[in-house]
Length: 485
Image 1 (spheres, rainbow, N blue to C red):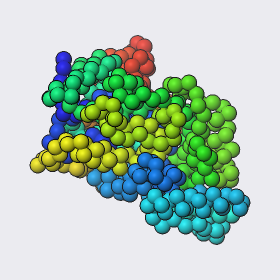
Image 2: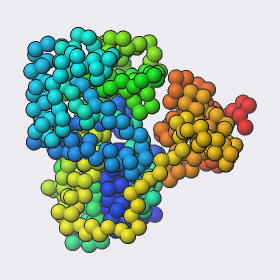
Image 3: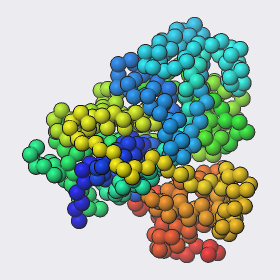
Image 4: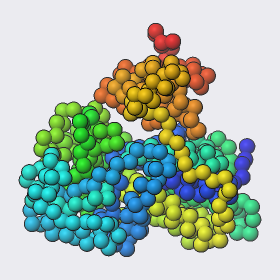
């Protein structure tokens, strides 16, 4: 089967989903082609979710051009797409005169990059803003515009809105080869060959994350190599009050060990930076210990015994540069690159989408806004966060809203069913988890996983033994589930 579109976007991470949502407003046929079986299974799920403000990138870099703008857009995107976003502000803590000099440089970078309201503050102001920050901190860069999100929630929300506006999503469709026709071939210049079917398109957008170099190579475009800069991340149990993001003075390759709250009140310690073999998502004791030690320097009273999860992922870094690669290919007309989107990729995603739109305009693509374009995606019901009156109304409408499956996060059966029936919906245990947090709590699905498997099997019309934990081959059970109906 072959389908033809105006535009194909390779990659359903936060970058590809943001681009799809940005372009969905126009009278163009668009397809998002994803190798995995769900949204945001690469770098977009394996990071701390910080919406960095933009003072870190060197002025003049592509990162600098999109970071502050992306951070600014998050307020509008969160309101329109219904994902949780907290603009808490952040501090980069300094402990000596050398640190202060570095903070001054960061402040100047930020002002050059368009970051608003930056200032260097002293101990009294530090501890008024965040009482748990180290008493040893003598200075800090205060940045009111920093925030945080669940990055996979942003990607899911953006693609749900894009699909509601007519975008096609192809999952489990790794691109095996790309055929490029001559420049005068009119309707469709690119053909993408995938196991899920072939895709023909006039314009191709490469947002493939750690696979971006392969896509570029298959299309005969720029040759570059990706470096797997692996990061370990630690999640702590929920706190009564979420911490403000606290940063150390950064290194040349990393922002260092950061301690931050999350939109669900957990504490995240993020992230190490070590070059490892591509695809390595193992956690390492040395890395985890480095995270815990670095976190205690910033927040001495942090109870690091309350770890509920440690995980790792790889940033999509282009070898030889620490910058983003966003632009039309200089080798293959009609191919647009959005590659090397490492940190601050989450923060930059809305602005990267704007930039790709402008690149398409500049190349002559007709961009006529659709009459039926709807930028609003109503957030699904979150039973745990809903007011009591809403909970009662939901249970009255469907008793399954009162059947709690995940005790840690108070997720009822009806919410899990809804996460599967959404478009695009969950097709795995982890897909359910990312959409409604079933299994995200302190027991890490020890209580609810078998029930989630049973619900998935019923909704997808398959045997429980066919239900996947995550991607292809990750079966959870073998044989019947005892006592589950």
